Amino acid sequence: MRVRRRSLAFVGVAALAPLVVSAASAQAASGSLAVTTLGRHGGKVPTTVTVVAVPSGQTYSVKSGKRISLPSGRYIAMTDIYESATDGAGTDTLGAKVVTVSGRTSVTLDARQGKAVKVSLDTPADVSGPARISAQVCAATVSTMPSAFSVGGWNDAGALYAIPNSSKLLQFGYLAQWSGNDNYVAVKNTTGIPAAPGGSVKRSNMATMRFSVRSGTQMAGQHDIAVQAMPKTDDCTTDLMGEVHDDTAPYSATVHVTPGTWQPRDDIFASNGDDVGGGFPKARTLKAGQSATQSFGRAVWSPLHYLPTVWQKSVYFVPDALIGDPDVGTTGADPTKETVVLAKAGTTVKKKTLTNWGSSDDTFSARIHSAGWYRLTVDAHRYRPGITFPAGMLSSRITLDWRFKADPAKSTVASVFLTRFLPSGLDTHNQAAPNSTTTVDVSAVRGAQNPDTKFTKVTAKSVRVWSSADGGKTWKAATVKHSGSTWQASVHNPASGAVALRSEVKDSAGGRSVETVYRAYAIG
Image 1 (tube, rainbow, N blue to C red):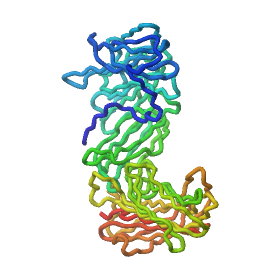
Image 2: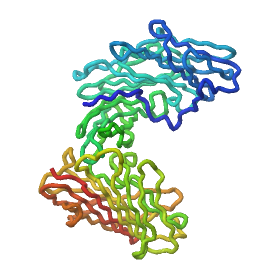
Image 3: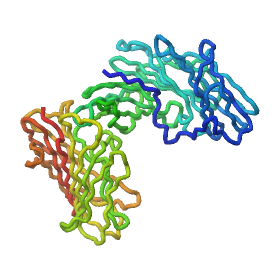
Image 4: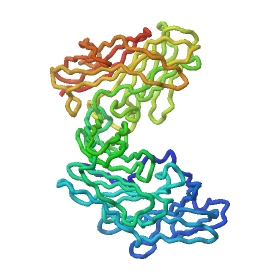
């Protein structure tokens, strides 16, 4: 297994991050503040101190020992006093003080006052070593998102400390993780920094999340899966993250968590170290004793969301999320390059090649001048310069062929569909047995698009499916049975190679949607 050290175990607050003002740029000052930070042996330790105004949330950053000019008022000064060591990871001491600035004000954060964050688990036999603890101190009342106004650190149990402070202007949150055959992750939030930070956890009161990571569909093979805390009301545990497993797919892993809402996530790394994929599936809310399974990398990857729309006398299409993991959603889609063509009565209205690599706003738009039947085709393949794709990568190319009515005077979502293919019986490499028969569940789906365009209800009247064993040169019709809201296709597999899948959906508005996924799954 490859080990990757994280600098901090917090993510996800950038969108609501406070405005940070440097010491040199503080304005309208009528006072000043200097914060001295002392280590666990009493000597001065240089740190970067975060200073948050109460209640405005104005945030300043200043080096310890340096004086910063500030308007008179109340502030929270907080920092992580990190001390390195020649043997081990050193120590972290989190501290915060509420201070009223008036004239020349000074305050000291003294790591010698820190108390060890102690978290216990009724230890299962497979756990060895101490817990790894991520913790942070937050400004509790300046925002509805305390985690956006925070300082944090992480270390092994016994090397992470917090300086007690009973102020209700502060919150303290931690995530503790134990590793063994399974992982165990616990979070807790408190108002103020407790005199005895930590707590005890019982396995019988935990929930379980199982991960199934398959290979073959992704742009790279190294998967780092994790869980992030997502409390119902944002607090100082929000987005604290526990890494569950980091290895080459395929693999499975299990994590036991304290009850609550958890965000599973996957980061996929190429051989050059680039984070090239992954995403955030639906968060899971679990009670004690409950369990859930999260899959990553199951075949088949295909278009996930966007449909053509008619708006302001033009046909629009967003060429995004065209090849993505259906178990993750649009955040699990890979960048693509695609050629999009709009035609009417056999005449090309517009043709354009686009890519969403490095940009999220490439959109196809074509002006139309009369009502009638239009045809929009998309030919997309994965596109990520700078890395080498794995040999035999699945879902490497998709095509869409939509036929729908459009009227320049009417803004609406086109009456077309996307298809979801879900083969059963594949192994962890997304392979079917040679010369076998694979049952493929097929769903015809469409979701709301631009809120400014009308979304008319359209039903799928018929679904047909074909398979190809020679890369799309020839196609064989599959037997399709309708079952509830899905269809089941029986696909006869070749002796080797890969299988391409094609669907045709005819709808109640007279439209037609054809979707093709090349190398949908492999034969092993």
